[in-house]
Image 1 (cartoon, rainbow, N blue to C red):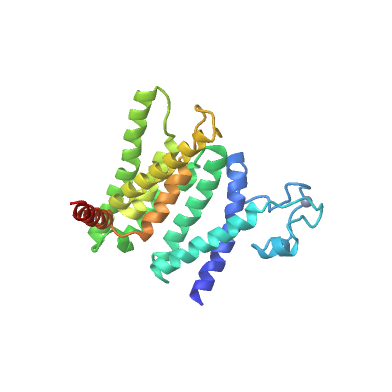
Image 2: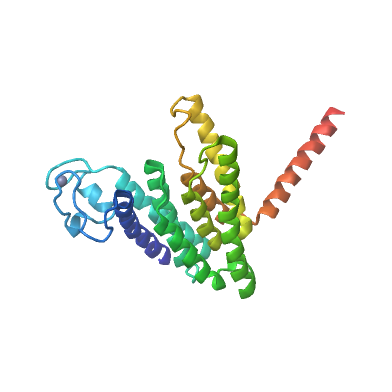
Length: 272
Ligand SMILES: [Zn+2]
């Protein structure tokens, strides 16, 4: 029952995410005016603005002018609902739920905006830094005692932002151009305040891995020109999401090494 409530809350936040995704990169207010059709500019009535359901009832068309409503809108709403639900499965109905739902909302909006515009709005990164640090004392993902948690939140902040800053400086020195935006640095400082130093470094590692795989794939497909920047934010966001569900990095590494050892042992034995 509580899960359904969290899912519905996610759908509503998803609806607001759509507003942010459309308006923030265009420097428009996310509060005023009320939602309107991008085709005919008519304001949308509340009953035509219900997440997912309205899209189905209107069969994906504006009631007024009949112009097509992008499938992206209900998809974002559904995705936000599922992300919130996954936080419920992770944290239950606890104090941790709301801050982490806020993290999910931010990562979703950032992913969509960065993907299309190659920018990460500072508003979200700064909000994550502040909320991450302020809620750290009850964030059991960061440690056992209150002191450990607050400390890990600060170290996570510096580890997340600092490691990308170092990569950015080295990248600039090597390639004589900006390899990474300041937006990525600020984002991972904020994420680090939420998840601590170990997980944020692990998230950056995973993000880089995903980014490289997709980047190589795209170059092979010749979909991007070499000089064009690839947005890094979506991969960092994906990495940050995945590490929430993984045990501490050292546990994962031990497990991988164990697998490899077993594999080596079998390999050696079968080949002697
Ligand atoms: Zn319209």
